Image (cartoon, rainbow, N blue to C red):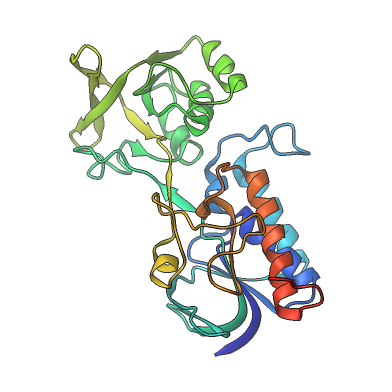
Amino acid sequence: MADLELIIVGAGPAGLAAGIYGVRSGLKTLVLEEKIVGGTVVDAPIIENYLGFASINGFDLAQKMVDHAKNLGVSIHEFEAITKLNLKDEEKIVTTDKGTYSTKALIIASGSRYRELGVLGEREFRGRGVSYCGLCDGPLFKGKRVLVVGGGNSALITTLYLSGLAAEVKVVHRRDSFRAEEALVKAVEKKENVKTIWSTEVKEIKGEKLVNKAVLLNSKTQITQELQVDGVFVQVGEDPNSQLAKEAGLAVNGDGYIIVDMLQRTNILGVYAAGDVTSHPVKQVGTAVGQGITAATQAYGYVRRPYYTQ
């Protein structure tokens, strides 16, 4: 069992920012990440709203963050999954598939996972035409017909990226207007090979060895159509990775997001949360970084107590 002052669960923007501030403040800090470092920002084809970068793809931005953290001495254990959290005592116990750690303070920055449509054929054809990452799989669909499902920022960012690769991009959205930023909406409207299908949902994904059709239902007319497509990119939001935290006693809201106050404090003393796993209403790289900084600063105050007031 390794004795630490701060453990951070998750190595996305929030976790990496927290790690940097933890190390710089002198805390014995460890970051645990069950997958590759960088978080879901790695999957973003292009980011144009992160301060200091007019345009950068998500993988490159994530890599810069990782390099920054490692160069400052942040210890990151990649591919080490949390299996249990014990937060009842002053010393917090974190159990993983590789070991057990004790820590004085804990920051949950476990992020979120892609939300599925839950329709017939979706899981069957995952990796065989169904994708949740435009940057990862877009190049496989050069000159082909693709369908993007969703109407938020991630859906339109993916649409813009795919429009430069695919011959035809159709966007299906269950509402009659997008929920994305105006700049993204205008950019999509300018693309000649992009067409939007409003007030419509995907009901089934069909194919043989690979995807070749999507069954769509118009919610207003109740008319069903089969659309010939080579790929379906699902971009309908994310769900928080908060199950273990909830089981350990952390309070979550109705959607499963960890409830935090303006200082990233949870309902358990010495435990903080930051980034997309929290109840903060804005899910952006910039807000995640800020929350990670706040959480680490509060954790330092809790551990060393030079100005701690909780």
